[in-house]
Image (cartoon, rainbow, N blue to C red; front, side):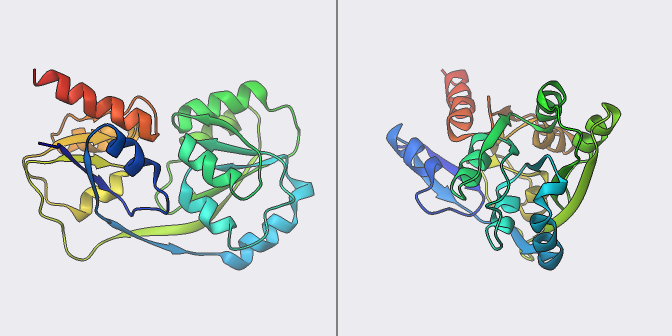
Length: 225
């Protein structure tokens, strides 16, 4: 019998998670747990027109790349990203994605080691984006200008799921699901920390990508043998 994996996010067109897990014999189900609303579109458009004033852009989520897709980001030559999925979404806009580190802490260290420009970086955020990255960059003498471009809210009705393998992509998603008897996989250290605060020790993806999540699921299944 096929094992089922439930991904707690909205399915995307030609979703790599579905194709990869299906190819390894898993049934895959997507359950949306967050609503996303784009904000400050006028301010974002103005910022993107000021590309000469910045040395590059920082995007740590696909929601932020979806926000700039609504305007014209084509003049930006350098975009620092977290994760291969965010990198892919940036490249689809014709932009150069660099870094693609596992989390914001790793990206901060990458930028500090490689960024030589004196101009500030533009960091596009959501309402729940952690401040670890701009703090570390500013401590290293790299100026950062932040602009919130989206916000997320939990679904009004909580999902009630039990005895499944659940993949959590954001701490915010926890507010949309009842905490019952499930096996949890987290996309990274921030989400792992949020689960541990609820008394859950998850299997953590080896990277914020389909293959990294698959590694964690296979580690769980291996532990059952």
